[in-house]
Image 1: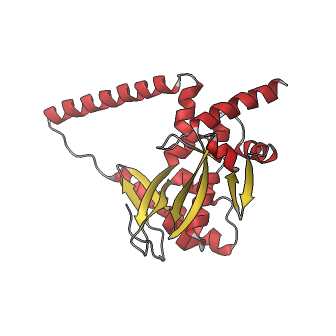
Image 2: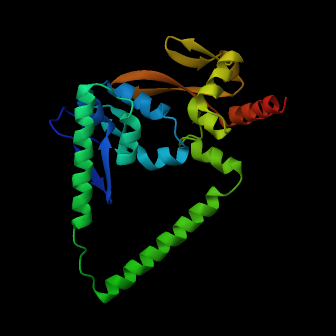
Image 3: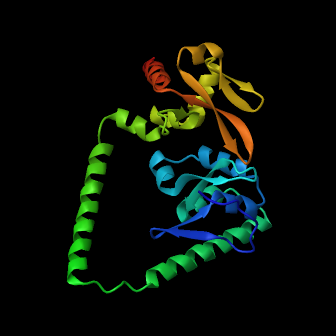
Length: 241
């Protein structure tokens, strides 16, 4: 969990297990944007679930009210993907600063001399590397299972799917899937948020949860596993028709 971010004169990057990342809080501060909008942009990025999982790590921080709120640890690739649409002179300056900072810390990591290992440590390291290879192979096998496994990859820890990931899970672009949900009468706008009609919540197709971002509460709509199966069947029938 992170502490509350403050504005900086230079980018603040972190190194975790050799992986360099920047907090979404730092990006919001330096680019002059509200953190809730950075969170929205991250969660609405048009990328594969695999890219999102590798480059946007969900985490949390304590806000001014000492309440846990959502933020993201973002890699160099994730940062580049996120800020490519940011425009203006100030944005250009900060893009350059971040690129320089990433280059600097990654160069430092590459130039850090490897520690001298004893024979026993060399054997132990070899076993660890072999274990990692086995782990990656097992992961690859899991990834090659039927589409239901892909559904799981799009789900959050509660087994629910945000609207965009639900679209990806049925192999459709998020915007097209969400537009279909609106046109088909499943969703409507309540203020600026898309929410399901009560009867579809009662049928177990959707859940609405409250999330905290920057000390504020927001309602977020999720598709349940039952809803995903139902929409997958309807979507398949539409394509066949």
